[in-house]
Length: 355
Image (cartoon, rainbow, N blue to C red; front, side):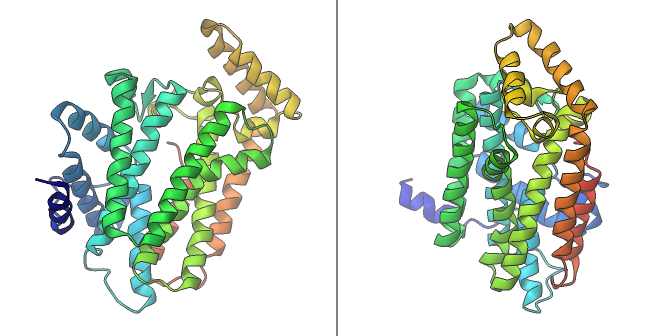
């Protein structure tokens, strides 16, 4: 089959029914229609992964299935359904448009690709409570797995997104890479630099997820602006909470060890808020980086204890909550119905996030 024939077949392949459904009691179970959309999204992901060799396919399928609440693909579908609601189209009892499902799958594949590459860069041992892919297959194969997921994302966007949204995706991936490169050069030592980096690392993908489905399905500009602001606040709060959980989280729930960020050379918001200034932050960073491997974890634990005692975690927690409050303030004027209720539930859930 030549490449043109393959693309033609790929584009007209119908959505397949899910091979399995998410267990009752999952977060999205309170919204059955949205849960069904996510089951279709998972089936679309499985279909795309089936094209790889058996060994790589099994590793990727296990990784993609291995955890997470499908938050980003859910935001794509919520946006698409909200666009329909803004036009007075009641589709709450019907599946989301096929294009929204395929784009949701693309966003989740993109997220999975970034996690694989992040784990390699950070030399992380675990992800979602499981051994990291690069520890199972080696860095060489893990890089290729991540690259393959990136390629699937771009293919899905090329087939099912507008050129404008494809450009937004390309810029978003560039920002992710820029954030990682900047962190490799030097840690963030000010809140301003920290905010700049997490925008590229995390926030931009939340904005893309929430506005993608809405834009592709005819949402008016006023609604898109609201969703952009909500996505910004949601993504920023999510990353700050990630930073907090790296200090206070239960590894059995987070799936990764405490202090992994600082061990990997990343200075996060609680540290920035607790330190007396950039000089002390740089000293903390150097003390970890220059220590023998066997001593680093103890040094990290000592620093994190100081961060907690100085109130860095408490202040960061209040800032994360403030971003969620800003997101809630944007709800006035959103189309009423299940999509808005689901989005509000996401904000409420993040307020109590433990993983």
